[in-house]
Image (cartoon, rainbow, N blue to C red; front, side):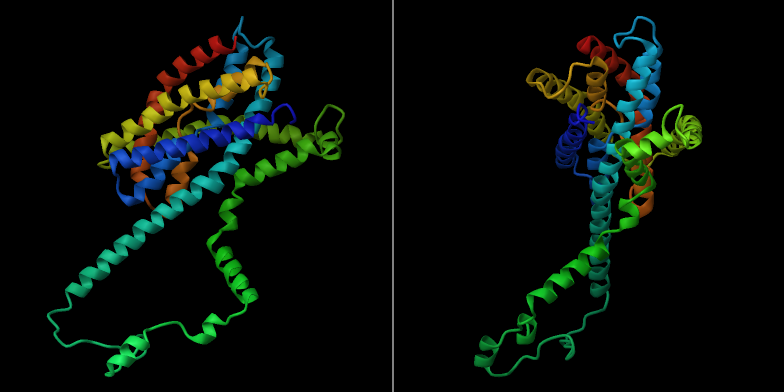
Length: 344
């Protein structure tokens, strides 16, 4: 873990740079309000788990590869990918989830305001002013009173104690933060994995040939091996929804593809080469290869799950995933070949 300290920072950089580039795509394409969070999320969050779980074992099995013996490459490679998947899941559900949530709520509020304004205009040509005595301040006939006594907060409200204000703020914050979504199953699994890997007592009791509870590790490994093809089938099922189309602007798809497959990989080369020269990244070529691949992967599939939770941009997300994953076969082939040459 001491040697791998740069990977969480590297993943954070992919999210930050991707978010900035996604914001630029929003400025250029001017999408509807409910799609702005989706575009930023697709540019920021990459598939840091499923894709690498398929690529790294295949690369390690190749004869004459640049990463040494196949068994050693597989052992270290799966460790690097596991950390990448765990950290990526935490960032995804704590950052992208809230970006999409805020975007969907803003679009809902704007549509509600538009509907309210339309309903007010349909009331009719009422010339009599309507004044509610319970919700509005009474207007005095005296001009001096009108100027001297505007509608202000009551004195009792301004004298609320600081502790009460802090309490109200914490209650409001707890209502806004949904801990069930922050601690999603993938995030909870990452936390449990960190606890098992970092606590020596738990690790020795679960991992290894002589571990008394090694049956738990064998069962988890068996389920994990079956989860990879199952997730691939789920990816294919989600992509089929994109074939129906949604009227999404072509410029949005082009912008996301340009960010994920051109701008981010080029930025990643500069960052990783610079970090290696400074000494922030150790010289293991497989480790540097995975750090570079984190900039070139397609958007995370869990973004589709997040859009389904809020019911905003589901069909558009399917179209984006369809095109990005269709082009990923070409992009990943080219970038992975170049990255292998670069680290070797």
